[in-house]
Structure formats: structure tokens, C-alpha cells
Image 1: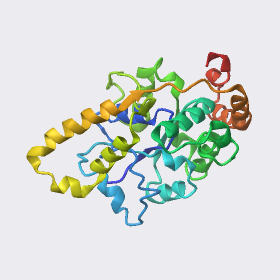
Image 2: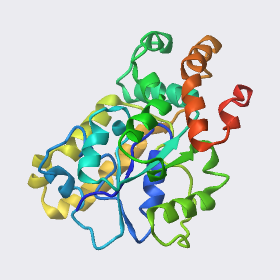
Image 3: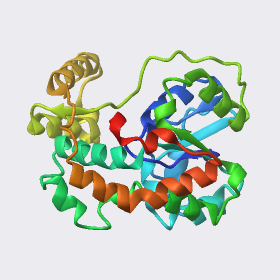
Image 4: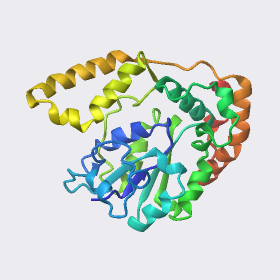
Length: 279
């Protein structure tokens, strides 16, 4: 089994939310986890890593891969085209200025970024800029797939137009559009960790197959509950400080063409990506 539709980006724009709600449709299968990365980091021409991600497929018509790293990688579109030439793509795109700032803080409270935001912005190819280059990503995929194979979901519209958006996506994927999923809010919102040491230990425990094999079955259920409780205690809500105006000006200048490119693709403006005073 291989995917026939993809959510290739953007990070910190709502891909986890899309993954969550699409997976609730009975005729959509999203595999064992988000971010399988089978067409990039785990690429193998045999497709074995991709097959392993979909062990429980039971006839669902739409099979999805939500890997946000795909949007910035030149190697990914031709690989997908060689395997799934009729693939469909759902892009979830947030105001690129806000997305870049959120991405920075996500890495700060994840422990992988310690530089000031201004220093990060000094490099043109740094992650906040690269993953906000929406027009470039659309062209990268558009060189291999027709425009009608792509749909854009504007993040800021999800809450207000929830049911209309998902009905449209279900139609796009060729599954029953009358299935209604309950809106229980966005996923993967801003968090920070009380202790990075505890976070790393939890990740090691979860990802290490040796630990799973050596744990007796009767202990696993209690262990999962304990680890879940510890993870919840170690994670707290976090709201980034306001962006400095000079940093906002830098991002607006660098990303103006990206906004224009998305608006051209859609055929209409996105007002909330222009009114900075709303932020």
C-alpha cells in the first residue's frame, strides 16, 4: 500500500489538525503516524519503508501521507511523480510571517534553537524563511503535477469555515462528502517543556525498540499511563512574546512575493495576511 494524497506543508500551519480530522473519515487512512517521510529521509526505491507505514489498510479509498519536510525538498516531487503520478496534494498555509515566528519559538521551546530571532533572520536560507516560501513550494510541485491536483487550505479560515472546508476536502479526495467530523479544536498548539531532560528521556523510551521488547506485557499498560501522565506534567501552554516591529518588517519584505504567489494560485486576495494590525 502506498499513499495517493499528501499534506506536504507547511510546518506550524495546521498540518497536525488536518491529519487529525481527515483520519476520522471512515474512507481515509493516514497510516500509523504523522510524518512517515517515506519520500525523503526514509526514501528507498523498493518502497518498503512506505509500505510499512500502512499495515492496517482495509480498503479505504484515500490513503494519506502528511510530511511537512516534503515542501522544501527538490527531490520529493519527482519521486512522488514516479510512484504516484495521479497523486493529490492538500496544502495548509498560514500567514507566512506569523508562521515563521511560530516556527522559531517551536524550536526554542523544543530545545533546538538558542539564538535570538534577529540572528536567525540574518540568514536567507534559515528554516523560518525556507518553510514560508509557499510560492516556491507550489512551483516545485507544479513542475510535476497539474494545478487541479492541489488544494490550498488557509489556516486562518479553518475555525470559521470548518465544515465547509472539510466537505470540500472530502470531495477533492473522492470520499463521501456528507460525513461530518466534530470540531474539537486545533492540534499541536504552542507548548513548552518544563524539563528538556525528561522530554528526551520520554522520547528515548518511546522510540527504543529494546525497551519495548524487554518490557513485560502486563507492565506496558501501566507504563503507558505513567509515561502519558509524566508527558502531560512536563508540557505547558506557551504564548510567544510579541514580534519586534523591525523583525516583522524584514519578514514582510522577504515574503511579499510568497503571499502574492498564493493569492495568484487561489485567484483572490487573503486579507488576513495583509492586515498586520490584527496581530
